[in-house]
Amino acid sequence: MFFLSKLLGSPVRDSADKSAGTLHDLVVSSRAAYPMVTALAVKRRGKVVYAPWEAVTSFEESGTMLHLPGAELGERELRADELLLSATFLDKQLVDTEGHKVIRVNDIQLLRTGNDVHVVGVDVSSGAILRRVGLAKVGERLAKGRQNPKPHLIDWKDVDVEQTDGSSVRLAVPRTKLELLHPADIADLVHELSPDERAAVLDALEDDLAADTFEELHPSYQTSLLLDLPDDKASELLNNMAPDDAADLLADLPDDRRQHFIAMMEKDDAEDMRELLSYPEHSAGGIMTVDYAWARLDDTAAKATERLREQEEYVETVYYIYVVDRSEHLRGVFSLRDLLTVDQDKKVRDFMTENPIAVSTLAGEEEITDLIAKYNLLALPVVDDEGELHGIITIDDAIDLVLPLAWKKRLPRIFH
Image 1 (cartoon, rainbow, N blue to C red):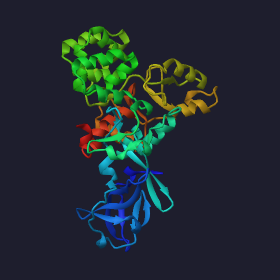
Image 2 (cartoon, rainbow, N blue to C red; image 1 turned 90 degrees about the vertical axis):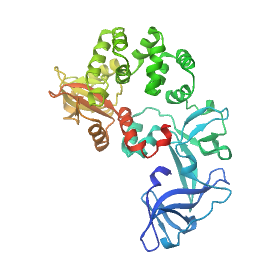
Image 3 (cartoon, rainbow, N blue to C red; image 1 turned 90 degrees about the horizontal axis):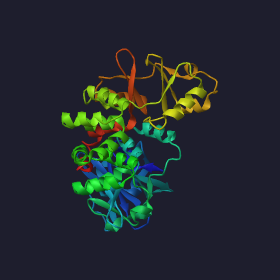
Image 4 (tube, rainbow, N blue to C red; image 1 turned 135 degrees about the horizontal axis):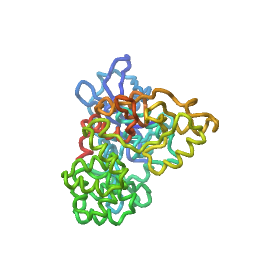
């Protein structure tokens, strides 16, 4: 199996092994339940031309080979049963039979059967986004770190091709049967409601789900909604949000309201919030979360496991555990895999990785995303000039930085 996103833009070479262009899209026939590729749309010298599937001798993610000259590729009309796969489906909203938006088509899965290639599924996972912005290896490592990850593929038989239009993809089953309701999906629906209705929806959700949904809302909606909520509900939302997300939200509030909400927090939470707000908005310090898993140099693996159990409810990610000395200086890092496989009597200092990749509290967004992409990190520690650990930047926060740069410019319609 392979994915459409890995094929688009790949080189196409002709029978003389010369460049015939790049793969622009796939033409598929919708006659079968699982559409079959019937032609390639090739971008050649600024024009889109077509190669019949019969002319393809090799079709791989690395490139396509044809057994005819590139000069013979020309324009063609699509048959009544044909459509362009990427143009028709990629980045469209899935809509169920009741007219509710479900989630976005992030990628499309293909399957080779003999000499043919068929469309078999829709990928709605965050891993598909990572794949498309050049962070595929990070996505693979993130998936391996999850316990019992839910599948994020929708079988193509549940896609109603005939009812699909220019803005959305229709599903043949209700949303509830897909079990894909995620805070981001709820936020998509909340965006379409009136201010009073938004408040009512958040009030009806359980605390953690309400906070997760609130984090997925557009910042402008967050600010206005928070100011409209009663103090107790607003405080509840802030307390259940990740510290870095809460700090970003408070930074957009008028100073008097910001101080009012901070004053309502527990002492430790208020101190963390003031620290996060003290850094420039787009710096590592302003982006990081202060909730991370940690251990001491002289802890045994058993002691580190005990600490992790105590911290698990509050930390942003448990995949990496950072090692700090008594002065809170960053000394090393180890993974959850390391902790589970090492002898439980072994000391942390003996199996940790020393001198982990880290970033300064004042580092900019480009340096952050470059380091995470270069070293395939799921989280990046943030230290001050003395090497003291202040927080971490997780991969989901890094994605928020990457999307405007590498995704939004190429695919602007998904942000409209």
